[in-house]
Length: 418
Image (tube, rainbow, N blue to C red; front, side):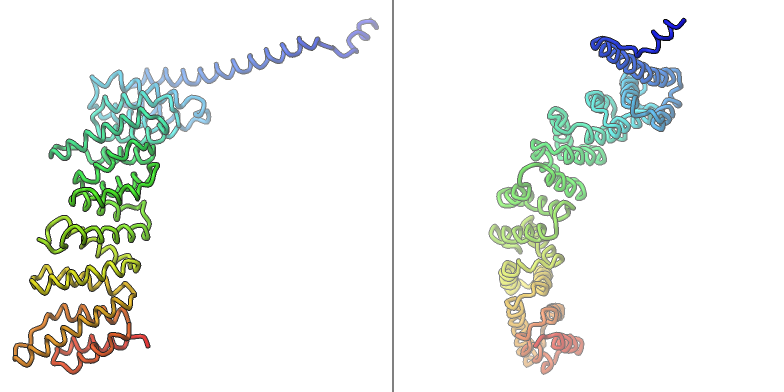
C-alpha cells in the first residue's frame, strides 16, 4: 500500500512535446466548440427564418439583432435574408412584406459592417425597383464599399444614367438619386467628379445641386480649384449652375463662398454686360454674386463691387428701366457693407449727383427724382458712417425733398464717425 502512496505522491511530468500537443489539442477542441456554437446559433435563426411566414421573417431579423451573441452571426443572417429576397424577387418583387424584409436586411448588412454582402447588395439594387430598397442598399454600400473601385464605377454609371434621363425630361426618383450622391461622396472615388458635376448642371431641384457640390468637396484633389476652373471656362448656364450649387453647399465655409462669389462677379463682368437682357445666365450670375457678397459681408471684394457699381450706374443712365434701377439698388446695398472709404466716396458722389439733378428739375417745376434710389444711397452712406458723405447728406436738408428723405439724411448724419 505504501508503494502506491509513494508513487502518486510524486509530481507527474509529461514529455515537453507531449505537453505542446496536449495544449494544441485543447485549443482546437475549444475553437471547434465555439464554431459549432456559432453555427448552431446561426442555423437556429436560419431554420426559424425559413419556416416563418413572410410577415414574420422581418421580426426574426429584428429579434436576432438584439441577441447578446448577435456579433457572432448577424452579418451572415442578413446575407441569408438578402439571398432569400433575391431568390423571390421575380415572383414577389412588389410585395410590401418582402420589400420591408429586404430593407431591414440591407440596412443591417451596412450597419453590421458585413463586407461580404457587397456583391449581394448590388444584385439586390438591380433586382428591385422600389426606391426604399434602393436607398437602403445605397446607404449600406456607402458604409461597406470604401476602396471598392467596381462599386464606385457601378454607382457612377447609375447616376450618369439618371442624369441623362432627367435631362431628357423623363421621370427619375429624386430620393434615390440623392442617396446615390451621398454614397459617392462618402466613398470618395476621384472618378466620381464628372458625374457629380453633371448633377449640378442637369437642372435638378436646387437642394440636389448643393448636395452634389458637398459630395464633390469630399473627393480627393482640389475641388474648389476645379469648380473655379468650371466657373471660368464653361458656358454661362453651367457657370450659373455651379455657382448656385457651391454657395448653397454646407461643405464650403463662409470665407470660401465669399471668395467664390467674388470670382463669379469678376468673371461675369469680363464676359458680358450684367445688364444685357437681364435674363441671361451671366446677368443672373452677377446679381446672385452681389447678393452673396452682401449677405456674407465679404469686404475683400470691395474693389470688384465698386467696379461693378460704376458699370451698372453707367448703364442705368442710358436706360432707366425698373430692372436696371433694382440692380443698381442691389449693388448699392452691397457697397453699404463693404466698410470701404472708396465705397463711401462713390456713394457720396452719387448722392451729390442726385441732389443736383433734383435741384435742377425743381427749378423747372418738375422736381423729378427716384425716391427709392435716393433713400437707398442715403441709407447706405449712413451704414458706412464715413464722414466723406457729410456735405452731400447735409445738403439734402436744404432741398425740397419730402420729410421722409430729409429724416433719413439726418439719421445718416448722426451715424457718421468723426
